[in-house]
Image (cartoon, rainbow, N blue to C red; front, side, top):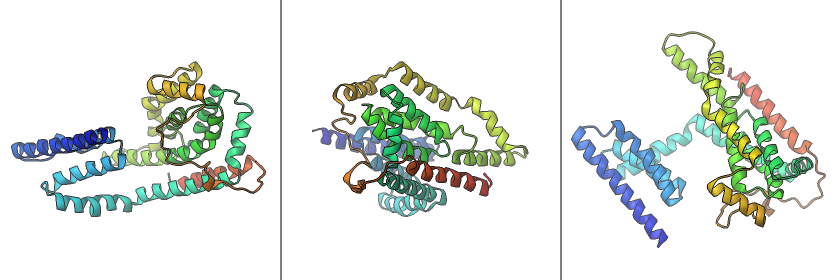
Length: 311
């Protein structure tokens, strides 16, 4: 019954979308303007309704392509695949992000097999005696890995997961901490992959306006106005220190504290580096250096790359 309701809602939303855009195109003579907001809104609504992010994004793209191709479904489907999706995957920046993510994922897997992840968790566990200190340690780790938000997520999550699991911190709370110290930190760090991109955008705008100056200093002057970044970091520290959670997060933390179940009953982890696939049955001496050295090399290589590219 629930599945049928989702399918009915999906069909109804798509029908409403194309009806609205078709009438707007006839009346206004143009399918664009404010209607360009409908594809992303449709994708977001479908994601909440179906819980299928990839399908929702695809339908959002498809709906936008339909608007561009006179609502011809066959041509729009082909253009969605061969022009927009393939073109996005072939884009140098997007391809770089995918390769970077895969490379860091491989590095995390190697660190796990060398025992580096477990060594860091055990070292921090000696100082983290409860759930609060484990969350603070995770937050600190998130701030230290400041040079890239993707690297932050892929490094901090798997590295700190054994510690937070041991202290009965829910995976929901771990995800929130990791997310709250990824982009917000990288967006304000003096040196990061984000900053190079932001300075490039500032330079393009100022150059187009005929304004010369130190674009890096312009960026530094914008940091006090990065309200989302600042408030997010303040909020996460406030929640951890006060030990207060709200709504579903409160329920998740109560479940983890009282039953020891860090994962919800219906949770479907996208990855798990603690599974048998990554296990190494040889006796390995646990050393923090097995994790610190690869991560340090990654950080230094990132700084060198930023310098070499002029960012």
